[in-house]
Amino acid sequence: MLELQHISFSAGDGDANKEILDDVSLTVSERFVAITGPNGSGKSTLAKVIAGILKPTEGKILLDGEDITALSVTERAHRGISYAFQQPVRFKGLTVKDLVSLAAGRKITVSEACSYLSEVGLCARDYIDREVNASLSGGELKRIEIATVLARGTQLSVFDEPEAGIDLWSFQNLISVFEKMHARTNGSILIISHQERILNIADKIVVIAGGKVTKQGTREEVLPGLLAGRICPALEN
Amino acid sequence: MDELEKMLLMQIADLHKVPDGAYNIRNNGEADGRRSTPHIRIESRKDGKAGIDIFISGKAQGESVHIPVVITKTDYRETVYNDFYVEDGADVLIIAGCGIHNCGQATSEHSGIHTFHVGKNAKVKYVEKHYASGDGNGENVMNPTTDIRLEEGARLEMETTQIKGVDSTVRTTRAGLAANAELVIREKIYTHGKQFAKTDFSVALDGENAGADIVSRSVAAQSSQQELYLRIDGNKKCHGHSECDAIIMDDAKVLAIPALAANNVDAELIHEAAIGKIAGEQLLKLMTLGLTEQEAEEQIIKGFLS
Ligand SMILES: Nc1ncnc2c1ncn2[C@@H]1O[C@H](COP(=O)(O)OP(=O)(O)O)[C@@H](O)[C@H]1O
Ligand SMILES: [Mg+2]
Image 1 (cartoon, protein in one colour):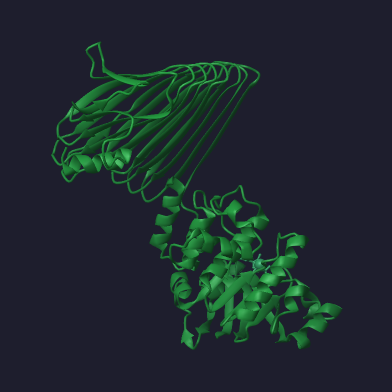
Image 2 (tube, rainbow over the protein chains, first blue to last red; image 1 turned 60 degrees about the vertical axis):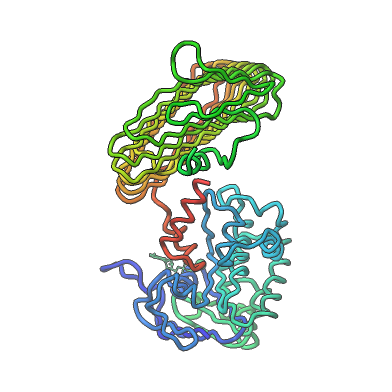
């Protein structure tokens, strides 16, 4: 279980100090939690704070009761946090297989690597030896990013807008990837998304606007309001 | 041949034993085994210079020649001339390379001057590896020079690698291409400590539709220094592409000087260059997979140079 207690994050220094996250508290104990909210509301910043890439200016992060606020990215990865970037990173020279192997934390066979890629809808044989470089499209890169998190198979998987850049046709498959993950995970999936189809399978939905949690609750509690557009999160407060 | 010499051979030529096909092993300046085959003839030079002439018949199809050089003496310097005569239509793999192990206090140096005369429509893959080790303070110096003439429709692909160990190197490559000839060069260099590496490529696209594609990837770590000069002259309708991609670390210095000379309105020449440290995002991504920062760095470099 992940607990965020009174997390604040401000970027920049001096006068231009900007509060990007403002006293965010939430727990992720359900199997599938979705975070949604307008662009620029601080969702990716929150994901980076969880992964340890950004250090919060205030607040505490607990994983299964352990205070991990001071732990590095590597240490958090060892504790079982995985993070799929909103904008995946390209590597000249590293192949898709190299990356999936590093994610799995061991040498994996071609067929194992292929099975992760197939799960995210990539025809594995075509990709396994490709370099994770500029020759891959944004959508391909996005799916490889998701495959690295699948290969890790840890207790907490954080996905930052996995649907972005993926065409509608493949989107169907993507939903089923998450449905499957939902069904079999022993831990939790935390997914940042704008997609109704994804919000629809969430056990809990958290709405973030202007760096604050403006609403959280079960899907039944939060979704109708979001869809009716009554709680357009940007305008709410 | 002792264990050390065998180890050097492994490093530069992946040779565990006597290779298949034609070969010539040069060990501390002495011939240490030579074999010619029906299609590949190796002879000592007749002009008094050290080195060999290699004659490759047009009948050689998918055959290979190994010509490794091993040096284990300190305070030893040599200049060796190897000339390759590749007949029209041949198809060969040439594996060269130099391994120096210098335990002494003095400099050991190998300058290999390789000249390729590649006949019409012949195909050559030329693999060259440089490796050096040693526990003394003696410097290991290697200065490979490669001179390439490609006749009409010939193709030469050169893979040249130097990973650590060599203290000082000046690598010079000159090429002239006739019509429809094609040259592909892939260079990989890793320098560290106080090493110095200079690479100088100069390619003249003299014939219609000649093409060159040259990519140099390098990593400069600690206080090593690298210089890269890369020139392509387009003298007819032709296409040339060169790329220099360097990762710089610590206190290293990299100087890249590309030059494109278009002497014909239909010459299409492109150069790309990038020098920079490892991107922070790349390190972070691998750290989220559980690697330490140092492990992440190693993986990124390994991938970059593989
Ligand atoms: N390093 C930074 N320095 C300054 N501002 C930043 C930095 N990173 C993000 N921001 C700003 O913080 C806000 C939240 O960004 P982000 O977390 O990426 O939002 P979201 O993912 O919800 O779209 C935005 O206004 C963004 O411009
Ligand atoms: Mg975002």
